Length: 256
Image (cartoon, rainbow, N blue to C red; front, side, top):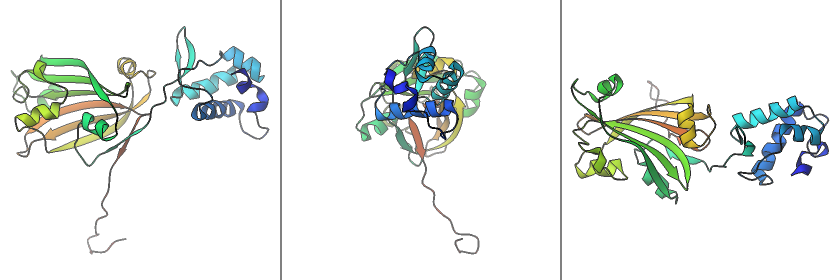
């Protein structure tokens, strides 16, 4: 790997700042497979010595690679190439389960339970689910994994009317709800970009502060009754959400 960082292999006279050239050079090596997932990079001091540049230059390049998710730094373990995750494209126009989405893509999915039971509801849950003050709430939290890569954390809250005994719940919440004719038929989702807190980052095996997509979903029965209130975080390096838009007519019946 030493030859990869030799100055003549990546420095160009008019290629811009050295730290950016180094960052792009390492990025290309990762994408081409010259440096593979899990490989350890030389220390900043070693790269600086091999490339005949300052440690400040190396540090700035590595920092950007960390921010972009190409490498991870762990105290005592140095810097290594992050696992390269294939991106998952998910439609926003259909309400489907994680298991169904992964099965359609030929991926093996599984879940790790993080929380499952009846609890005193938070004010947010009480309002979203229209619970009475003395009611409990069923909480179902799972780490979603596909092909052994953690992709998302889902935290669902439901009225005990729909899930009276969460401990009996199997792998699919929607299959469970369908058995009692309570599977939701529509939902409203709000998507925002946030940075992962330490606990969620550890579950998803990415650095703290990594970019992610947060989705808050409220699902409804055909009658209009709320059945599900879910807050999820999805790895920003693994998910693309796609929406199909219809172009409507203007008030005069013409298109512009």
